[in-house]
Amino acid sequence: MGRLLRSPMMLYSYSEKAARISNAAARDGKSKVAERGGESPPYEDWTVSELKKRAKELSLTNYSAKKKSELITALRNH
Image 1 (cartoon, helix red, strand yellow):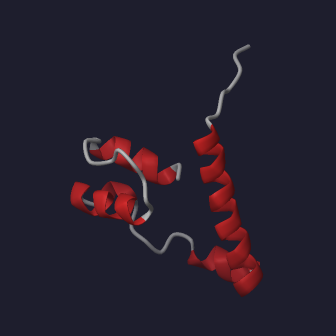
Image 2 (spheres, one colour):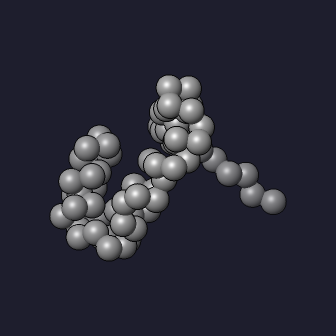
């Protein structure tokens, strides 16, 4: 059975995301955080330009040459 290897950057991203969710839950309450989910249209409905803009907002790297499906994956895994 293979071992899943995770880069330090990937682990940092996961902990950064977990911290944002935890801080929002502490600030606003868990039910309010859950209510906010799903308000935006799915990434598949976004244009490549919109996806790249969002990637830039999130400080993702190496997004400019990615295809739409790769951008969506990168944004979802941030």
